[in-house]
Image (cartoon, rainbow, N blue to C red; front, side, top):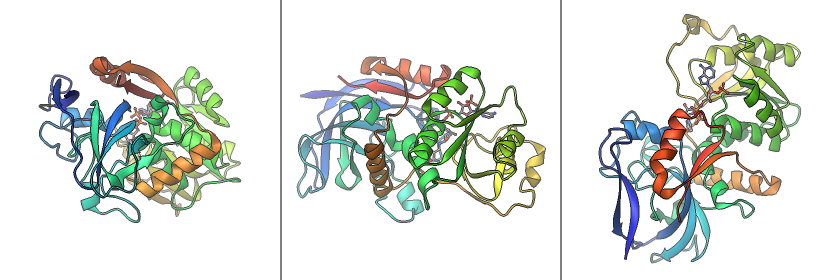
Length: 339
Ligand SMILES: NC(=O)c1ccc[n+]([C@@H]2O[C@H](COP(=O)([O-])OP(=O)(O)OC[C@H]3O[C@@H](n4cnc5c(N)ncnc54)[C@H](OP(=O)(O)O)[C@@H]3O)[C@@H](O)[C@H]2O)c1
């Protein structure tokens, strides 16, 4: 029997993406085959299509790293999953726990291992992650990349919590998950955005204060004011080098800044001296390990968090989903369902 999958045949954006039939995969030892129910897009998936992602693609790879489905076949020796389980996969095929190495970072689904834009995916059993039961398939298919990297920023190595302020910069999926995770952990949240409409939606999501960077370009001063001149204890900068100087200026003297965004263009000249005498920590994080993913899911289940979904496209309109993701300024995740 045949199954459909999209493949990246060449790095020409959407022109290089094609759909065709292939054999239903058979699991090898310590592998499971999952019937995909839903998958979703991340910024990296566009970079991968355009050839700007730092990791080279496997030839003819099946794209996308977020997804959820049902285990339908087990290879020899599998103990971490059973037939019928509803599962996702971790971002990195073999990063289970502890610090990440370059070798672990270099093995990723939807890049050099086939990903989720298909009717079936093969997962290494150690990368299987069970998803929170209260989530729909569309919701459960949003957590692997943006959900987990926001969690790593807010909850690792020490969770933000009550009495602390978390500043989120950017309202892509990473920024939205950061708002939700920070509220789950009991922190006060200040969010930066660019329109009144997004400001309203951020408040509904739980942000305690929102600063509109269009009407308040000096948003770092507004954050200082909102924190009584102390600054934010944690900053999740989901934009990049462009906003880092302002994130530093908005931060507390000994803050933790997690730089998740990769946008580097138009860096202000002032970036040469952005620290202003503060002894804060700035770090970058690469998504998270399987163990981090499981910890996040346990907290999501405990609090009943529901991911923000912008839109849902059917499998045969995957290219439209990519287009909407790239050009539509979505608020929340763009999901593709697999019938
Ligand atoms: N390290 C990792 O593991 C990892 C994982 C996932 C994603 N990422 C990176 O994280 C970043 C965010 O991804 P995403 O998918 O959540 O969002 P995204 O689609 O890249 O959107 C980012 C948001 O940033 C804001 N923004 C854009 N330009 C800005 C500017 N000049 N100044 C201030 N804000 C600006 C906009 O929000 P407003 O209009 O509301 O201001 C926009 O919606 C991307 O660079 C992505 O590659 C990294």
